[in-house]
Length: 371
Image 1 (cartoon, helix red, strand yellow):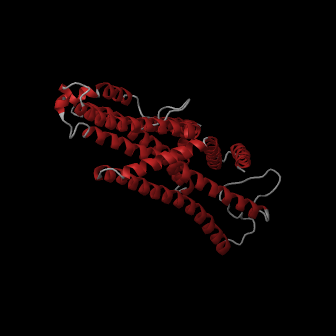
Image 2: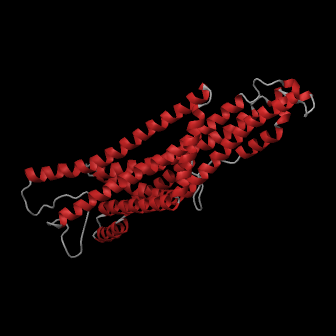
Image 3: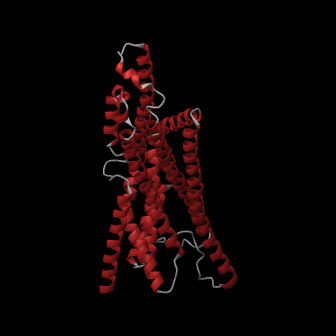
């Protein structure tokens, strides 16, 4: 169905470009992008479903384990989970509003048409623009058939983008909270341990006990740190293709949507469809970039927490010096979503896309003024 929808959108796009209706051509090209994104998302999820199940299982194990820890760990982690829940509600509310507005627009148009326009030549509105080379898509029963399929595609887009963006920030924010747990562990890594054991022989029972406690603490830190890198790598392999598709195409489509909004405002009109699409295009790019920046900064903060853990104030640091050096070295590697052909998803990426889009917008406006 998605491939059929993309073929139809290409036909509509070519037609509207040929008749120089660039507003509808822009709208059709954006819908073509959306359908392509859905195919990329479904492909990534279906090809990596075992990784997703393993990732969910790991996150559940983290939740169960942290529930048994001290209150300062539990409170910090549960605050992060509450933030994820609130973010989920906000995102689903936003996507629901977009879908509801689409439906309200067509319903209001149908009501206005039925009440005030009795002219039989006026076409009944569809959710998305359509054109057929040898038939009228607005006649019965074509209209009813195409309206049904358009509502079907609207539900697919709603379900996919709601779940896709939510899965991204749920997994990434979960491991952002795990990085917080690591930082808290470094704050107390030398607490409640007898420093004098560092002066006695390694074979003494008291020193062995302290060494075992330190090894257990640093092992938990290392296990969590490795789990963060593993999870981000898994997310990159699952959602890498749609993210590449998204980053590559966003600049052009944000430019085109902004240009069409500006053109409609020049005519004294407000195009609600283009405004909604522009908001959705910007937001769905900003969210992964912003969370990527949070993860990167928090990953570097782990190295700072290790360095500021008070190792220079106690001789106990000699017992785990090699482990601490390895953690600091590993923390210098950015915790970032990376895929072939994809720059690291950070706010710098978002800024670059928006800057490129603005450059395209100025070029398009200059071309239009000269012509």
